[in-house]
Structure formats: C-alpha cells, structure tokens
Image 1 (spheres, rainbow, N blue to C red):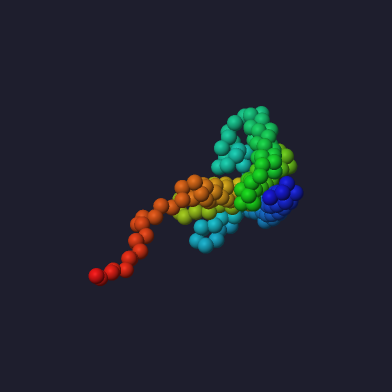
Image 2: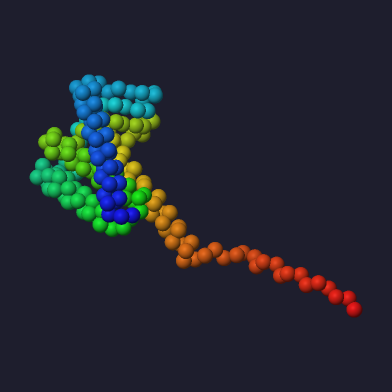
Length: 185
C-alpha cells in the first residue's frame, strides 16, 4: 500500500473514531450529568455520567496530579505519536493500519478530554450481569480494545500465512502407484 493510501486510511479511521467518541461524550454530558443512572435490559446496560482521572479501569487514578500529568498526558501523547509514525512509515497491510488507527484514535480522543476537562476523561457506559460488571467506559475505550483485537487477528492470520509458505502441507498418504497391465504368456 502506498504512503498516500496509508495516510488516507489512517486519517479517515482516526477522524471518524474521534468524532464519534467526542459526539457521544457530548450527548452523555447533556443526558446523564447530574442525573441518576439509567438501566436497560434488566440492568445489563447502564448509562451514567462519570469521570476518570486514571487510565483504563482507573489505573493510576490515585497517583499525585503531577505524576498523572506526566504519565497520562505527556507519556500517552508520546506513545500515540510513536504508534502513528510506526503505522505510517512502515509498509503494513490495511488490517494492521486500521488496528493502529483505532488505538491511536481512542487514545487521542481520551487525551483531548484530559486537555478539555482538567485531566479527567468522560465515561458513561457500564455492562454486566449481577455483581459481575465492567468498569465505566466510553467509545474511545471501545476503539482501543477493537484496535487491539484487529491487530491480534491480523497478526494471527499473517503468522498462519507465513507458516503455510515456509512449511507446505505434507501429504499423509503417498498417491497410489499406477497399475501396470498384466501380460499373460
């Protein structure tokens, strides 16, 4: 895939994902902030306004503010830039490129929240059965997890394809020998 095509695909996936996440967060702020949790399908799905000072599942949320800034704003920004450069500079297939774009878009959209909302990310969805529940998450988190899933599947397929090329299948039984006509005489 040419550099121009990689750039267009990466940019398209990233921009659409960021726009979708920021739009759903704006809807969540308007609909859920300061209001009780809404539940659907027997409490399988919950919609509630929440903010997260940490990373995924609030990891690092208890760190001092300066440490969170350096880790979650500066560090994550650097990591997102590195992933973007890697994805655009190296010849990768469209599946890998899409996976990288989803990860970058989710991370960058949450990074935008930190800049807009004083170091916190807006979350609003929760799923589960009974006491077994996810943490509260957002569309950006789904993009990151989706990107990881795409990369895992694409990598598995690539490994499988390489294995077929380097180790062709071995026939389990040799073909039967041709019969020779009998001559009586």
